[in-house]
Image 1 (cartoon, rainbow, N blue to C red):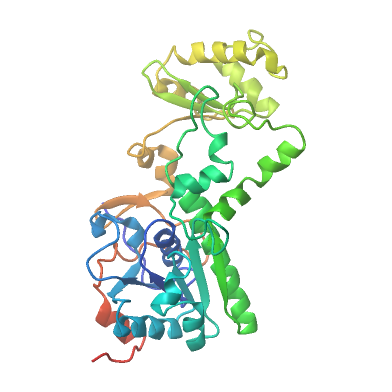
Image 2 (cartoon, helix red, strand yellow):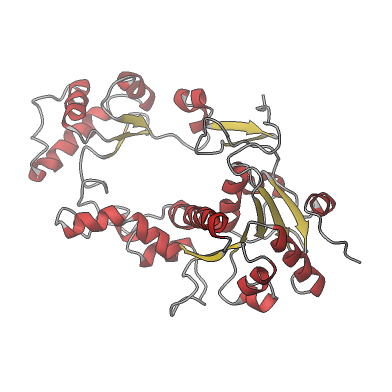
Length: 375
């Protein structure tokens, strides 16, 4: 059964107005995060349908938003965006550097109308630098930061981490942090500003701890040679008898002892402190996990502190007992989807609207935002 949506306007960002100039990738996700937390997000779509070739009703990043159509190649479309910017707290755009300016909706154009506006810019390479005007995608940005180099087998190519690490972790979430911090400054000072969120900056920032470990000499600049990159036999994945996988991570000594006890390997494997014995330790652990199915091992480790979890597929994850108990996934408007995160005790976020069809709310937005009439 579909979860009942909360009343409109819930969330800590209730009353915050956001304009999203429609695009692809990290911009729409960032706007969804703000909308989930209660912001009134108006997406300005271009004529001709959505930027992505998927059914808009299935595009979860469009949830909790409203949409109107504006052709930014016309004076009327530009005027609509400037009218929205005048009434907004935050504007998000993800064009290449200089495009918004050429269209007439750049930071100066918008902040001339609204000096308190926070203007969030989302790109891969950033607003400046020799590559700032070149095309790229998540995999390129992750590659040049050194992050992609860390992921994958030692004897094979780097593994592609979907687009979660670059677009969303290093891009969207840093944009959200940036515009909310700038919004706080604007409310205190009355002064808006431009937030330059670049995926290469965010992904590099995510690697802060690793760079510190490398400086300390406890991280090698190669794959599968370190504690957290699959090089360690007690931090990685193992195949089970039914060709499933389990993930193990008992890094702390008490957890590791419990791990070995439950595998019946205590006193049968080399000491974990000696990396020279890691190959033999890995072989012993791998052999044990091949004796049972993924579900049998899940039941065996249930309730323990051995830090073992089944590797679930996207379709399986919502049914896991822990995620189900927390309602980490919810069903809204016929789609099973992740619930808003994080959680707030007094002002919870919610899924209030289904994904917005392009242009579906023009009259409603014009009324609620008191936009001037267009002839």
